Image 1 (spheres, helix red, strand yellow):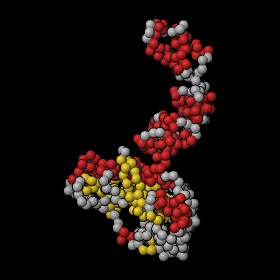
Image 2 (tube, rainbow, N blue to C red):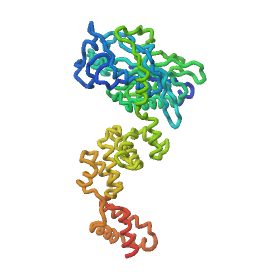
Image 3 (cartoon, rainbow, N blue to C red):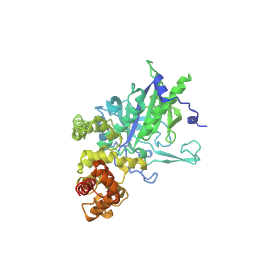
Image 4 (cartoon, rainbow, N blue to C red):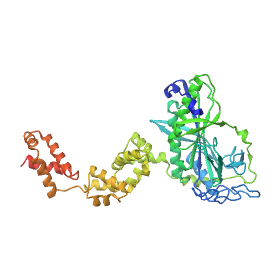
Length: 503
């Protein structure tokens, strides 16, 4: 029986009633440079195993590293975006540990002299702002990738054999480490998710990484501890390793809080250890005991010169930073005249950028929000995909809203047009023309449908003529049904009024 199957959990509300959580996050970001951190090998994702290697990243005798200037610049830009102090003198260190995916037997990283320190990132959860302080942003190299073959779980336990792909070894990797974050209470899981979400948006805005969590561009280690409410000391933390989705960051914190609370309730103690997260169950299981810095035997890297960023160059990078997500949201909220709550809905739905692009393509802000948060969000949810993965572009949504505004189609027809666009039948105007979905004007066909509705419901006609004008709605419905929704409802109502009330 696995460890996760034997964990006792308490209800989340009970856990936060008795214990105060402290969280911390260590986020690893693969930079989108063309070459690796200390050699010229390609960083293209998905190449055949061990085809993007050289003597340097394989640590062959006599090979010497050279630092990637683009990676250094990207790291400083990340630090500036997070309000960090940029070191005027920094250096690399050797972090010694012997894993099969580390060809050198050590990782070239930074230890006591990182590039960026003392920043912060503010995140909002349910209208309340939480400040997450950044301890450090440092630059290192990624490891290779192990593939364990023959087991049921993909882990080394139970595997027949293991393979190692060194294509990823040496790719520039930035680690962003927060300080412990107390005072979040029951919101701790959501604050953790909000932090990684906002950080991901900043990285995308900076253009330093694709931050595709499913490809490992962004990986998060989630630290969680509990202490009795009112305690002056924090509890022992666990570190859930390599959590690879925003939803899972929240789930990992929630599970650990429930698990640790149950253990403390039973008089047990929390082990300082790394833990694995299981996507299928949302649970964690023990990994290894957590090393301290002394276990890694850090010492300065003798084969690399120290980094001394020029102050004027750093200031030029600061001046060239793009508009960051928080400032962008404030600006768009003012431009669109929406509330903070509505802006939060857009951001949480992953629709903000899509709506912004739709407005830029000519749609009114209200129309853009309506379609992305309404029908399109429902279709994405039904299909189990993100909004941005739908087979429709912001420009096509803007075209759809333009057809509605022009009176070419109505909302009901627009939903049929969406079906066509999402089905790969072309843009909105093409679908309207191909399927004959344009609103029916005051044509002979519509006149015939109106006359047929009147002739088929003499009792309704009598009610309307007797003063119950609201009964006219039944006749409108009949005409809309007969025309398969292609008639314009206000036009139909006017025609009926003319014939029933004035005829």
